[in-house]
Picture 1 (tube, rainbow, N blue to C red):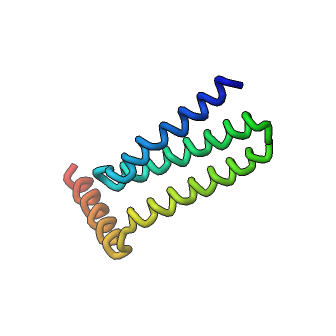
Picture 2 (picture 1 turned 90 degrees about the vertical axis):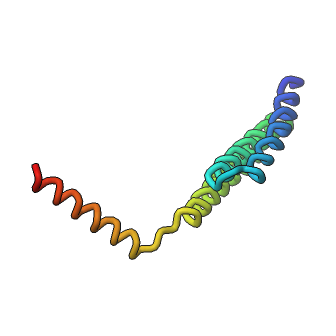
Amino acid sequence: MGGAFWLFAGTICLIFPILFRAVKGPTAPDRVVAINAVSTNITLAILLWAFLQREPMFIDVALVFVICGFVGVVCTLQVLTTVNADTLTTTAKQTKRGQNDGGDAA
């Protein structure tokens, strides 16, 4: 039981450098990866706490937290990678024309 406590404490301590990367990260993808890592570490901490307290109900809490973290990352990526539909259509047409031109030359 003592080893699980130190593992729990170490997991909590590892969250802080990752949070630093989430705040200080040079690019948006670095921040998204850092937030995903924080979510994973918090889930691990919840599961270790469930083991230490012998409360299986915390496992359900951890599963809900994982699902919320995943949905949050997907929504964040949706916002960060929004593309104008007109730009996407124009790019697809240009790519298709380039493939047709290249095929005729051969």
